[in-house]
Image 1 (cartoon, rainbow, N blue to C red):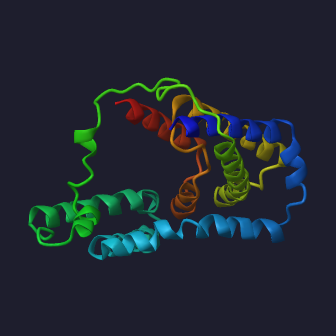
Image 2: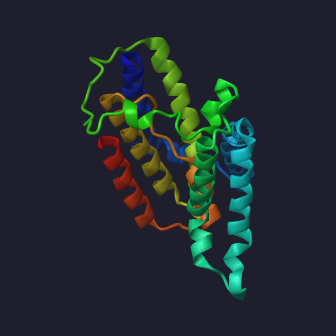
Length: 247
């Protein structure tokens, strides 16, 4: 953990420098639709292993979730001959609630009592141990794992990861603007975003996070699915994340 802290702190300077020094602006000036589309596609494809492979680990839970989501998002929102904003914007939450209740019913009924441990871990709703293994209140503080260790191998590896993450983030910013109906972000917005991403990585390193700050491709996909592109939604979500990281 201390080596990761040191690597995050140093690699964050890379993002901060290329972001606020406008160096990334020079690089993005060469981006065209022909070059940005593969970046956006790769940003989504690298998340494939978190999708269908995970669904296959518990098909009786994952498949109903997928079917319900498609029904709510593509068909139920047109109930009554007009667009229903409830199913369009909250289709994911409704689907998760229904499927979780279904999984809880299977767990209580003993459907997974005589299956393998991996199936139990993937399908049962009582195997995460999040409540029993977490403190009720835990306030993070800088260098909670001790003084950071600066190792060249870890630092260079993290810098490469930061560069890849920056490229992926650039494509994701363009996709987010497209889904929200806005114009493509100008160069100064892209560079400022990269700089802020570096500041986030710096705080990650100071507070002992395991990973650095990155753009969530999943959230952009969710934005395209629900059609919600309001900045206030992100701000409220941030408050929730800060609250639940402490309590």
